[in-house]
Length: 151
Ligand SMILES: CC(C)(COP(=O)(O)OP(=O)(O)OC[C@H]1O[C@@H](n2cnc3c(N)ncnc32)[C@H](O)[C@@H]1OP(=O)(O)O)[C@@H](O)C(=O)NCCC(=O)NCCS
Image 1 (tube, helix red, strand yellow):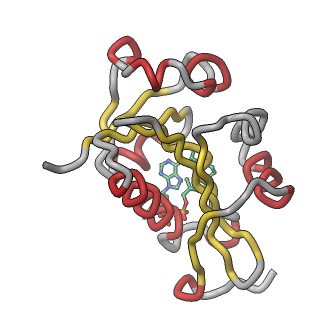
Image 2 (spheres, rainbow, N blue to C red):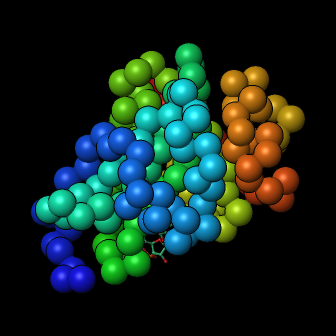
């Protein structure tokens, strides 16, 4: 793969597809509920026609679950992960979301640097507790984190 300049990478809504599932699966991220979660919006980062990154948002009335964040290995370390997170946060805020939650087993320090703080699972809003990621697909050892919209 030729490594594209990040400035040429465009982020836009994307439907579930084999390329997307492959990218997530290659990062050991859950894929089983990609087609069944009604609340899930997916955004892809494209270099020409190639999907090089993805982020997902499960949208609920006042909170969202950020999930499925992955960047193709060849493009890592250039700020694309950061762009995807910011893109998802802006989408969430534009839809009235006050707090963005996420679950992670491996990237807590990545999100800490982007304004997320560790949250207590038992304090999570009902909408987040009801997600398949919270209740089953992410291991119980995964860390719940939250970022509240700046007021
Ligand atoms: C996590 C991920 C999306 C970051 O994408 P990226 O485009 O490389 O991220 P950025 O370029 O915005 O940031 C790079 C920085 O994050 C750090 N970083 C990358 N992965 C990290 C992790 N798992 N934990 C902590 N820091 C991490 C890098 O070391 C780098 O640090 P530096 O800026 O001090 O050099 C990418 O590594 C990835 O797809 N990983 C596999 C899937 C994954 O773990 N997703 C998150 C699950 S919740």
